[in-house]
Length: 76
Image (cartoon, one colour):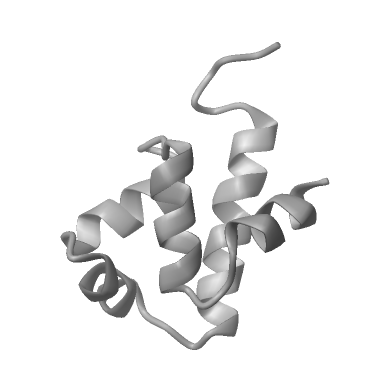
């Protein structure tokens, strides 16, 4: 199992989160406000520069108007 932050599967997750955000017509700033974090946090996880743990991923999913389950199901 590849553990790299830059693995193809992790990059797919980053792209998926970005797509969900765009489909919701939200900016990175708006998502950051919902999460009570700096905009750079959103930019870094979308670009793959920062890894999200499962709890953070659940919060991000909710902030962009979806669920953790929906995000995971789209990865499969």
